[in-house]
Amino acid sequence: MLKKVLKLLTKRERKRLYLLFVVMVVSAVIEVAGIASIMPFLSLITSPDLIQDNAILNRIYTDLSFESTNRFLIFTGVMVLIILVVSNLLVFLTNWGLARFSWMRNHSIARRLLRSYLSQPYSFFLNQNTSILGKNILSEVQIVVKGVIVPLLEIFSRGIVAVFIFIMLIVVEPVLALSSIIILGGAYILTYRIIKQRLNIKGKKRYKTNTERFKAVSEAFGDIKQLKLIGCENIFIKRFSKPSDEYAKHNASAQIIGHIPRYIIEVIAFGGIIIIVLYFLVTRKGLEDFLPIIGLYAFSTYRLLPSLQLIFTGIATARYNNPGLDSLYNEMYSFKERVVHPSLDKKKVEPLSFCKILELKSITYVYPGTYKPVIKDLNIKIDVNTSIAFAGATGAGKTTIANIILGLLRPDSGKMIVDGVEITDENLSSWQRNLGYIPQDIYLQHDTVIKNITFGIPYDKVDMDSVIKSAKIANIHDFITEELPDKYNTIVGERGVRLSGGQRQRIGIARALYHDPAVLVLDEATSALDGATEQEVFKAIENIAKTKTLIIIAHRLTTIQDCDVIYVMENGKIVGTGRYDKLIKTNRVFKKIAKVQL
Image (cartoon, rainbow, N blue to C red; front, side, top):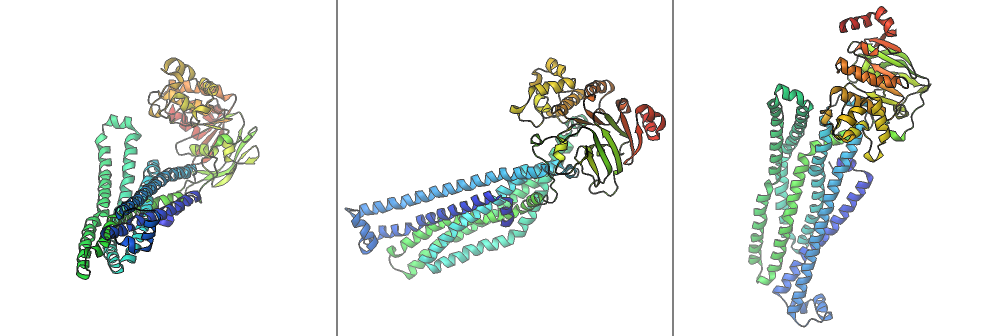
């Protein structure tokens, strides 16, 4: 468990952790010194003659010119009090350091996990539930930090204190100290061995039910319009309630289990002090002989029991949350062999030159987890500043081709070549700097029009001239300035709920045009629109066609009548090439699609 935690940390974070360990040791030494100072102070109170009998005390008494024994005792008491105050202050500072270190790891590990996810190729997300990825970042990281890393730190912190206290007690009274260690330690170890397996099982169930909770919430809000229309709110509430109920019960059980020994041990410990008193009464004479030791044991027990309880609770909590640590560790380190080389800041990458031709040579692609190729030995050429389209029935491979051109999918065999340069992982980001993408479903943030057009650009770096220019080309500028209450600063609502489908689509076009790409890929960008709205959107596209290379994935054939070249696809292969007028007369697949649509 500790090895996995250390591997989750960076080299710099591990150095900070080791420094924190040093502070813990120093704090523990001073804390034990504070406890140890109780015994000589009580000895002085009960036997002031020690000032004269003890050489060290006598020298301090003489050198500091004390006028009376009473004043020396007051001085000694003040010094003991100062040691205790300093000790508690150091404990406080140590706990502050632990809290800050642990919560900063909540930030840094979550950030690294997010970076790991976002560094994965597009194909990785095809088989993932994004609500689970979000749960890992926002929930599991925090659970691992609070439920594994913090308990481990507390185990070490309080363990150091407990060891030093036991060493001190062994020096003072070996038999009693060893007896205490055996009784207290044995009670905790026995309890842990009994509950260990139960904690492990409950931990796995907690991880599973937490995943189900996040999934249920994500699905409930995924299509709120449909949910409200059908009136199936209770179904989703029930779907959430069961795992949520079990999750709460598992956490409650784990917390209760962690505190089981406390009440038993307190009886044993404080009962042990009474036994010690009886022991000294039987074996020794006079209150002054054993009162200091009794005081030392009482104060040691007062400090020791919380430490032992924290150690036990920490071990139990870490064991309970270990499945989360295993999952997080696997998520962080199972990616290393799959990480591609994207630039996480494409603005710093120069666009790859595209002045002549884009070629796809012998492209074959098989989706992960399947065996049948979606694209088979495909060869096409796309000249710069032309408009080309891919047509075909659903499942023909049109969108897969678009994703390969976009660099989101890497072919299993074959090459994509731009002006004689093969696209590889190393220059993929440079090629993508040329691309603008308009999907069928435009994702809009719950933010302003500006932020949605400049998707991913910090507000202070927004080029407003480019925003207005792209909005005008997309034929949305007039609507924004004349009909929206705050113009470009209007909040569009979650997923653009305050806008019509055509308006969302045109904001999507403006977003794609903001960076002035050389190539614009439209993946069935108008298939969800009615005829009149589709015409409005295509008027915007016509404004672009003269200066950019257009690659259109078509559902409706009417939208590609003016394209320079149309590729007809069937079962992952090109079965026809030409302009609309030619294909509608000669190509079997194209004629069939046209007939169905008419």
